[in-house]
Amino acid sequence: MDSEAVLQRAIGTISQSDPIIKLLQQVKLGKMKPADAGLRAIVEAWLATYQKVVATPGLTKAALSRINPSPRVAVLIEAGVLQASQPAVQSLESAFSSAVAQAPSE
Image (cartoon, rainbow, N blue to C red; front, side, top):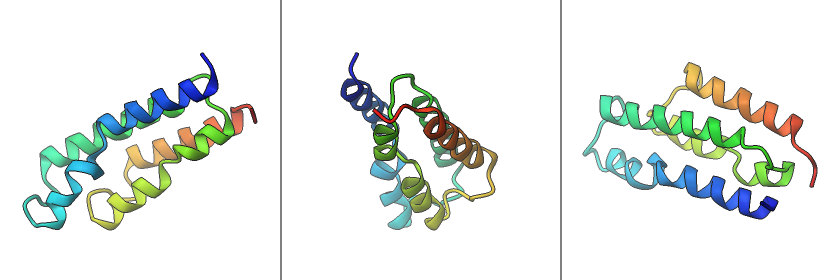
């Protein structure tokens, strides 16, 4: 499988469970609280999925830069849904850094 196909599959997997798309709007509208147990469970599952995706063999440094979790995590932190000190957040950041360090340039 070529690197573009691997990247597209990674993006699709991440997008399927992305809490920003569907749930963050509910938080902003006040229909859901950032500390809601259901929201937290969804976000935790998304972080775990994201961590698995960044470890996908075949992703290049360029591909990984396109799926960098930092901007999305920052949005969730800003909304109060995540905290930077959460183990799942730190684990994802560590996994992403390791994946970038080990990935081929192209």
